[in-house]
Amino acid sequence: MESLDALRGAGALLVVLHHAALAFFPHAVLGSSQRQNAAWEDWCHVVPGSLLVAGPFAVQVFFVLSGFVLSRRFFGEGARGNDELAAAAVKRCFRLWPMVVVAILLVVACARLGWVQSAATAEATGSTIWLTQRPHGALDAVSVAKAVIGNAFSRGEPYNSPMWTIESEVWGSFLVFALVFVSRRSPWRWAIYAATAVWLRSASTVPFIAGLALADAHATWDGFRTWATRGWVAWPAGVAALYLGSFPLPLDDAARRHWSAWTPGLWHLKGGTLMLGAVLLVALVLGNARLRGGLECAPGRYFGRISFALYATHEAVLITLGCAVYLAMAGRWGHGPAAFAAGSATIGVSVALAELGTRWVDVPSQRLSDWIGRFYLRTLASNTRDRRE
Image: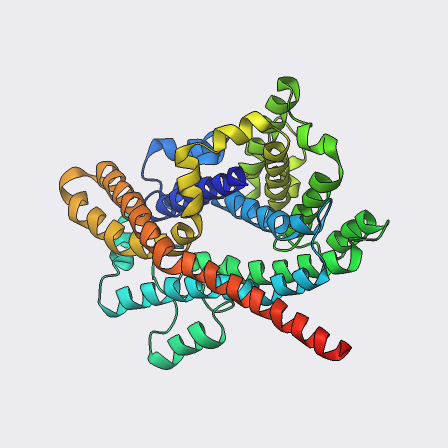
């Protein structure tokens, strides 16, 4: 479903913008705790400006999409069996691990070569919380080896901050596989989904369950695929999804109240609004053919194809080239033009690097994981024949 890939690509671009804002305009994301470098930063604390720095919303969309994509083929007509479900679980880590390792090693290499300029840039921009020191992880060979070999899914964040989501991706994926195995043929499966979500109550796991529920509805309820085809449904749903997704998560409670001034009490949901917005947005895409067609344009397909590599490698570009461009130009051009040039360079080079990462790492890792899945199924079938004979 190329529209979902395109949605993931848009989310990856949003994460890049979020991190660029954290580096050069930290007040736009974090509010009064950080220096304000431009008057327009206050507009990033209210809708629609907050959508420009809504990186946490994009992450919730990623999680919902993963829950949907991993489980969709196990529901409805032509549903795959338990053997294919087991194969999907076996190959999942092999699908993610190569890009995670490359993302970590890329930042480590830049740091060892002395290319990282984050500390000096943080002093100049006031980004004292997020940018001050990158990477945070130890750079000796033993520590790096432990991170990339033994604990890539749980220790990648100190070297490359976007990697914090990978541990959630791994555990969320296996949660989805377990729920599919246990409940997909049960008449009580919707109650099982709800009970599991209430029991876990985690922003890093519930979106996967929500994506699983969307997959179930998409496969078994024809009306779900067309629920948003009418404009009087689609437009309010889209506005609601983006409004909920624009919640300025890092701000203090006073700023959150301002964000939801016309919806009293909604700010108490905090991060829950991001998940609700992500679920509604994915459901809207699944239920509106016109929106899917718009997302499946050439740019949408392209950014969908490179989305994982863009997400995984852009921080290395930001803390090296982006910071270097800013430091070189800030003294002559001033903060605003220098930050714009640095952000533009970061986005452009990140896209180019993501293209290379997709060709050389992501596509081969897909082929590797598919081969492992097929090998598992062949081995399982061979063992079954041997037992029968």
